[in-house]
Image (cartoon, rainbow, N blue to C red; front, side, top):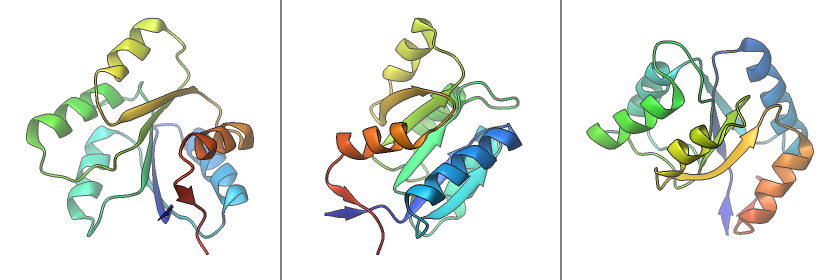
Length: 134
C-alpha cells in the first residue's frame, strides 16, 4: 500500500489554495501540504525537494507559467521527479483543456474546482492502493 504523505497544490488563487488545503486537511490531517502559486514556483519547489510529493493538484490557468506549460517544461528538462499522479484542478471544463492535459502521462484526472470531499473520495477510490497517513 502507498501512503499519501505529501500533496502539492499549485494554484495562483490564494482562496482556491486555502479551500483545497482545508478539504485535504479535513480528509486527512496527517498529510503534509506544499503550495506553489505558478508553474515556475512549483518547478523550483520540486527541484529542492528530497522526494517528490505523492500527488500534485495542478491548476491550468495561472500567470507566468500555467499548468500545461509546467508539465511541458517538466518533461523537457526532466530534472525533477514528478509523482505518478497529477490531477488537473481547474475552473475550465473545456474539452480543449482536457485534451491538452491528457497528453501528459502523469495526468490521471481532470477535476473542475472547487475541490470537495466528494472529489477527494472519488480520487481515493480511483487509486485504492493509496491509504491515509497514520
